[in-house]
Image (cartoon, rainbow over all chains, first blue to last red; front, side, top):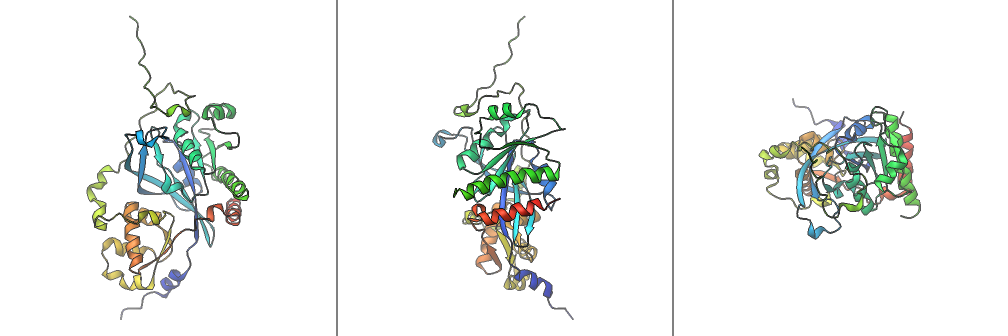
Length: 199
Length: 147
């Protein structure tokens, strides 16, 4: 006799899914994005293929960009269950240092972004900073302390990145769960201030 | 014999926004994302070439199999059946793509189809959630609870 389909499955399917919210984790290649996601995600970071629109740097003038194209890239992500009805996803932008990318797919509807920086290769994060500035998404620049070291002091980094004084610039350790949590909380503070000000 | 170091490569026009840090060491070229050849599968065959409608389904969109989907699972084609089998509990479109090693765009089309056929319930994310003070406060509380 075959048994009836599991009643448990029926129960689960009727459960209302959590409301998903997301934070974008951006930065150049090898700055620790996947490490940061993995440190705090309740699942091991997953990878999926996605299409991204690539464009040359400084794309205010899109009509003159010949290199604009769609590429398939690997994207890493993880998640944190906030409570039974709210789930936070962390999407890592595919690492690309030489090109600007349209991350609209990841960024539209996001709470904000954490831009991770390697202080030895500051200009790798220019595309991300440019992109979030233009999009008007709340973001925080977080210098990853590789081996506890930061190559420049924060004021120099702020100057070099030419970011506004209102953009938080912090240091953190992508391998440390609590350090990643605190960095995300700074993103949340920015988003909350923005939301309270009525955008 | 004098040796002139090679001229640094010209920055593309328009890249003058943040020129302050000219790197003296050329960063290592990024390895090509190793996905080009997996296109041997021609992922869009699975969707009969359709790519429409993918913009409407955000990557964090939650998907759950319906009663009807569970009943019909056996009659569905491989990828569709896999999705229906996987989503007994709510999953995001991104998680489905990762679990089944399918391209995100392919999953979007298949999820759209399965939803139109009544096999899946699709819960589009609330566009205002990310700017809603109460929601943000809940996320903050949830993150603070992480130890």
